[in-house]
Length: 365
Image (cartoon, rainbow, N blue to C red):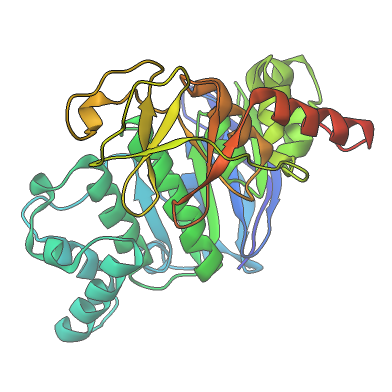
């Protein structure tokens, strides 16, 4: 279900213009990210889609129908909406929170709760959490419940207003990954607001950069925005390191992981060695590094290890491989398969050779 803004302006009684003559087409089944500094009109634009805010002029079309032709309450029940704090009802259990929208739409209690249980699994939460209250969940779990509730009515449109900004970076990355996984299965039309350009380029099929004053500065693919900013404002907003961010779109073709000496957590590492060893568990998943010349009394434990930096999942863009190499205490980026098992390691030099080779073919960042 596509969304179109046609000459949309929002002007408040004091003369403040939050959104200024916005023309924007959001394609069906895609993630479009609205990004920009505070006060640029991105949240106002989002909330005009479900009529939480009414435009001063212009029109917003949802599946080619003007949203003003629909009853506002009915419109909102048919559009998923996720906010920063999850917005859960504190006095209701997780299952009751998720079942709220289907019940408002006329579903009977049993059907709504069955749907809620299905959605807990969909967003990666164990079923036993359904009996808990929001205060008994972590911030990341609360946000997943918020996403589940937004999906409960099975709307083709999902609005997300800085939904992950209140959680720590590790949880945030996990939530972003979960959203991309869900989107690959569900194919919703998602409009996502953030002030974080890294989040925008990771999630968006298209990115709309707003400038202060509520005007659209640039709209295009993340790669277009990073590589071809239209003016100094966009260039400054995406940052001087946009070339590094552009590696998010460069495949790691030609990158071959190399073998590395390994030590087994729970096993005996033997005599100290003058090189780094990658410590793995029984399943072959990385747990950290054993530093050169380390002396370990008895069996190797995780307390004996040096934290290992980020991991690079095989087949993903080359930016992750470079980050893994640069963040590793050994200078060796650990490469894992989709099952988390170690495939080998790469160095920053290996990755730069891939980048230079791609640039020589005219496809580099």
